[in-house]
Length: 522
Image (tube, rainbow, N blue to C red; front, side, top):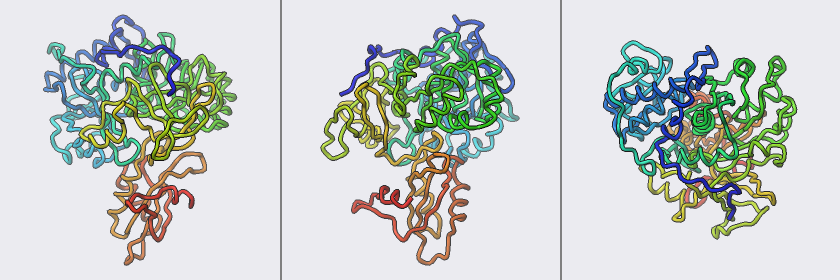
């Protein structure tokens, strides 16, 4: 068993809004959130006041403890206010990908039993259609403004009292993101107030933040990585978060220069752009002190090229998953120069790890031996919503969560992730479940069978690669037919990028797809 070198942290038995914004009033006029496109700024005092007023308005509207509110928005300065207002009103927040189709969104609404939606006007039609398909949604609110819908600004005018919800941080769910885990289709991950808040405390010794720090939030807040590293962690410590709705290189670089950004938390595609794109040389990025990459594997050579170009310490990595709130490992900021190339970091405070053999015996392995990574700690999820069997398959009776990733620990205590058991595809950091795409492909009238695996494109991104068996009576479909069929029905990041036609999908006697055999043909 491997244990963290950091001292254990006591569980943070606070509602997440208190754990993050409990000192907001004391930070006063310090800038908390800055819109990186137009400069609109919210101070800590405003964030504290606004989220409390909005919580009162949501309670007045009918939001009660145990309800679910769907937050459907790109990054804006209103997102953290809406999130913490909802939790203060007693609701769990299920975060929704802004590019989700109405059908995908409706599935999440139905599964989570969400009764309220907070969205933005450009996404309103998708939200309306999703609400119609799902049923049960009482009201759609907007962060900005739209005819026929109340805005968050309208709600701030309420005179209702701040709600007293009696939240139990250890049991009550604060966030309900959706994840495919190691296999299957997306499931609601129940993260309690205490689990998320404690994970913030666990990360702090390794990646401290404070009022002098300026963090650029370009990765999405709806993703647990962005929610923790870019939203909650800096706001908890009085840092300034500069918010961008999406990654556009020139806007991103201009924001670093203008706002004197000190820290970047990114995914590998952004590291690639920083390392190779000619536009980088046109901007003053000298304020940067460090870059941390997570959400997907980062090539060690690319990390070196990026750091050398920017004149920074080596690019650090972090590791975790939605089911772990999400963090378990990170390269500490004060050890970036000594960390070996390719490591995803060291265990954060209060976290235990085992590396076990991949055979049925599941024996514990020693330093230097590769096996499946198991994690135990206060950040392990409560479970999957309404899926006790899936929860039991993920977390054993002793509290060990099976990550589905294969790795080893070197003699210095650094973790290296080398492969994975799980079927999940990570496209630019976003989860794509092969089972979801396979089920969709089988609805095509000319497809008899299908399997989907992850394959790497020329830029090193993992992409969905479909293996399709044509129906016996069909002349088609063509590759373009398959690509178009999927693209019309899923969010852009889930699209199939490659198609191979085969005579039969290799399966075990149990019916399970033998994906390793398919990988041999890529």
